[in-house]
Amino acid sequence: MKLHQLITVTATFALVTSLARGNELPKGARADIKAAVKEQNGPGVPPELRTPRVDARTEKMRLLIVQGIKEGTLTVGEATSLECELARIEREEKTYKQNGRAGHRERRDLKRDINELHERIWKKTHNGVQPAQPLEK
Image 1 (cartoon, helix red, strand yellow):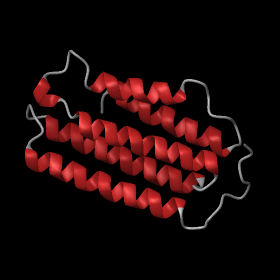
Image 2: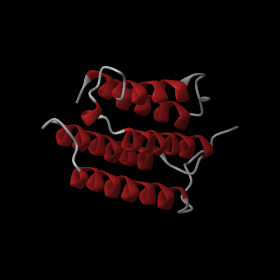
Image 3: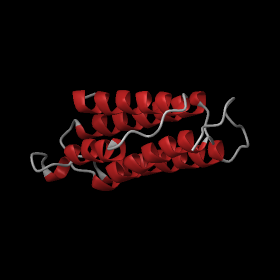
Image 4: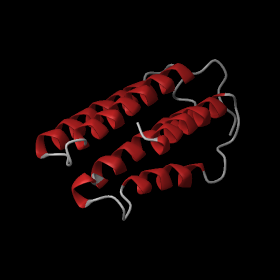
């Protein structure tokens, strides 16, 4: 895992924990997540190693997790589990790119994994389990 990916995962976990404690979403948090994803597909990255659709969807999943914590529909444990799954998908993407490109089958596998994660996020945000103390808006 690259340093910026580790920072992104660590920052997201810290953000989730902070929101669970009742703190407000820091200004620029959404922009920080988007900037980290954009860096993965920057001009210095060869075209065959770019996966903008996968990166956009992983960014969306990360924002859904943050939104679930903020709205009180995800517990810290659920959010941590989902974030770990997202980190696993990102590691898998990196592994697929090690041979110089992410092929059709590898992209299809990543798409399936992201779809399954999205379904898990939806189920956990709609399961009726609320945190011990709902977050104030």
